[in-house]
Image 1 (cartoon, rainbow, N blue to C red):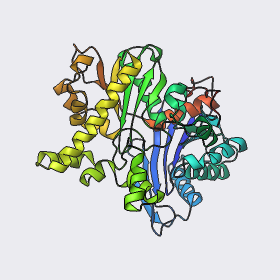
Image 2 (image 1 turned 30 degrees about the horizontal axis):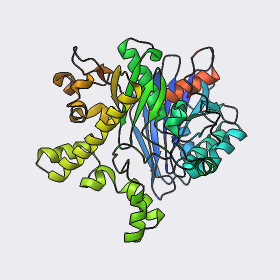
Image 3 (image 1 turned 120 degrees about the horizontal axis):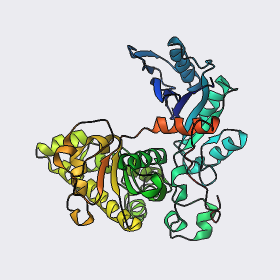
Image 4 (image 1 turned 90 degrees about the horizontal axis):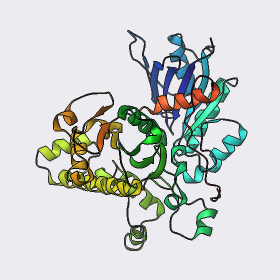
Amino acid sequence: MSPSRILVLNSGSSSVKYQLIDMADRSRLAAGLAERIGEETSTVTHQPLAAGGERRTRTGRLADHGAALGAVAEELAADGLGLDSPELAAIGHRVVHGGLRLTEPTVVDDAVLEEIERLVPVAPLHNPANLTGIRTAQRLRPDLPQVAVFDTAFHSTMPEHAARYAIDTETADAHRVRRYGFHGTSHAYVSRKAAELLGKDPGEVNLIVLHLGNGASASAVRGGRCEDTSMGLTPLEGLVMGTRSGDIDPAVVFHLKRVAGMDADAVDELLNKRSGLLGLCGDNDMREIRRRIDAGDRAAALAFDIYIHRLKKYIGAYYAVLGRVDAVVFTAGVGENAAPVREAAVAGLAELGLAVDGELNTAAGREARLISPGYARVAVAVVPTDEELEIAEQTYALVAPSRAAPTPGGAAPESFST
């Protein structure tokens, strides 16, 4: 039997998340997190997912990603799932930015590594960590295919009129200033699963997908391809998020420089780390914000209203972009679990055919489900995202093409130079 296991790695600047998935039956064999890499006290939390497996935690200094992946390999080996297993087919890596050249899952070689590194200026917080994870995994298993799956890939099908900013084209082309979009792995998975929920082929449906977590993004999906998305050159653009402002007048940056003496780094920190829900009310956890609202907290109520107002604007805008919408789909931590957000987001949109059923909306569940009443012209759905499975699917499709169908992001527009 051919190897069928895929190890999925998501390498951050000081952490590595992982899952081991057997693609023969899509079963999870193990999952875990190595965190605080490089600090005095690091932690590896490992969860065997077979029946009866107990979570284990180990502490001790992990000097770098090599040490972290070594610890992960030891934990997997303790369960008989070591990296030396002949059943391991490939290692799939989440890579945040692929630009316009890397728009499909790709087996990593030197040229791919160079391109990921070339994109560091437009993803300085993410691509370096992703590169470190890939290079470390290569050293541990140089014989295995290492596959990069890009967050930006799904959005590479955006037409130029959606992807370009209205600035001087020579400047934009010279410095790769355009809208790339992020969370693409989630949007790809959720849009496909939403079509299944509707009993239709992905090519037949138009969807508005709302990925609402601490980071949040919306996408307009026409027939399985991204038509527009809310994040842009960076993950800062678009919806109000946990700590990010989302859309803002660019002149705010110049204003703060002139009147507050803030330099570029200070403004960057303000907009990315001290804005959004946190900046508005001091909390970026939607559960705590709702608790405060129920207790009569006006700051929390205003933050929630601003969050919902922006969300509605994007629903309306993407409805106009698509012309016809089959479903609005909520996913990720807030989208899957915060019934008040879903209810408020579509409240007052009956003229667009949108409504939620109160009982269906508040019912607990981890499965993909409809929460709209039967009479609604446009379905409203909750579809739990599974980025790790999507990375495994795309990785396995590439290394075992006879066993799975790839789900590429699409080709890059030839008219835009990277």
